[in-house]
Length: 274
Image 1: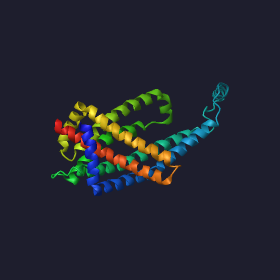
Image 2: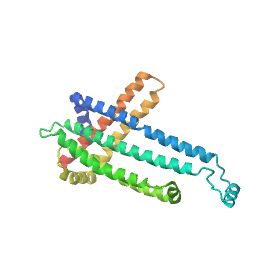
Image 3: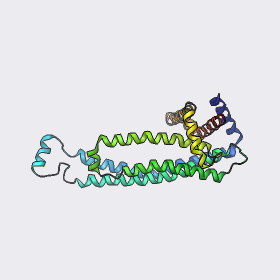
């Protein structure tokens, strides 16, 4: 069974390549640290949203009040409607900065992490620099498309967003599904980047991703389950026992590393059967 063999191989690789896994562990911690650092923009977004909410909660929007304001040629949004537009624009601006920062951090981290993960294959022809550059190219193309869409989609004013309503949701929902499909094949490509050149990666990834979809989905599910369970333990134990919560936090970090190793092994085993 490919999944069971890949699970056993992944555990064996983790035991035999302690130095590489220590580097991956440190790299994963640095990644989470950078996410916390750029999270300052999320705080600003929340503050702007709260200001908008507080202002709107002070306004009266009953039929009588709105009618009187219209008849009196007053703005239905109160004495300072510009404040809503200003906060909305600040939210959009901060979110764009956050997306750009997140894109840079994510693409550098994933390129490095997957290159180091591929190194455990011990392929005699393995080249860390070439693998990193292939990973970077794959991620730049895939993540670049995703982030570009969100940047362009955010080029909208508050009044336009209010008018479009459900159409905005449908646009985001359809692209969310497209993004998932793009990431599905991207991670397959990252698993093969240590073995194939860029011009072969796309063909190989599509072939494996379509013909062996049940194996790939199963590998994704196992990785997601491990991450979700370890994260649950972190929150469950945080107020019960400090030592246990620390161990669960380490397991949470390791679950990301193990997930990458598992997917890499599954994809490479499937590639041998193609």
